[in-house]
Image (spheres, one colour):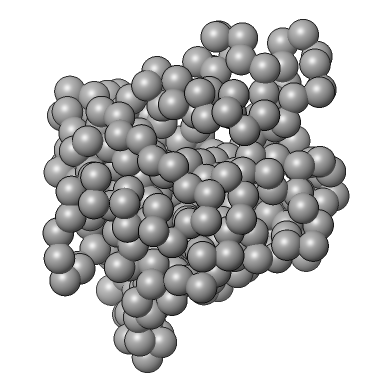
Amino acid sequence: MKEFYTWKKYRCAYEFYPHKEGDCSTIPLLLLHPIGVGLSKNFWHRFCCLWQEQSLLNPIYSPDLLGCGESDMPSVAYYPMDWAEQLQYFLEKVVQRPVILVVQGALFPVAVSLVKLQQESSLINGLILSGPPQLELMTKADSPINQKLRWNLFYSPIGKVFYRYARSRKFLDSFSKKQLFAHEERVDEEWLDTLEKGAKNPKSQYAVFSFLAGFWRQDFSQDIAQINQPTLVLVGKQASTISKTEQIEGPEQRINSYLKLLPQGEGCQISGRNVLPYESTEEFIKAVSNFLQKIS
């Protein structure tokens, strides 16, 4: 069920998947989609449909972040705290009850910022991190000057030319196979159609450019260490990184590095690479469901 709300004069979209029997007693999931060419709340459709097919109890809220999907797309630079403030409003005014936060990939900085904002409201009961980036990228701040330089380059006519190429089906197919999926055959028509459709609006480029400029690259080490909610770190057995780091790590190392920081963390590996809710949907749902049973 598609709905809209207004935040800071902007029209924002979300989808709500209720429990089939109308049971409102179980804690909802709040899904955070990744940022990338053509990506939006539609990233979660396969997960949400299978979740409902299996008659799992938890209802789902799946919002479009500002600049993505069917939400408004102002031509501004987006920082993690901007999206966290949007989600804080969404939680307090729309959802109005505690949730389990399920965050994909490098949107973890947004989740960290949201948890920080929500420390007094207690509307987040747990977190599930799907393929989080290497911890080094979450704890080593990038130069703000370099971030601004990259943003200015992307915001220029050069960036517009790049975005026209990046939203072509040829590029989307190649990038998905090289960087996102463990198995090339799982880069299917549904995936490519979703990305192509999501990237049609040229205004969707500003959220993507904000991500590529690295505005999410900050030192979140203290904030991560203060996440007291139960947290599941889910990493693909073929996980990789698309950002430059000083060292390459395996999935077990990535999990362990997070568990050293998280007060109530636990980890799990499943098959797949970097888009686990889409590539390994059934395994992902099983891991999420098992975690929810533990903390409920």
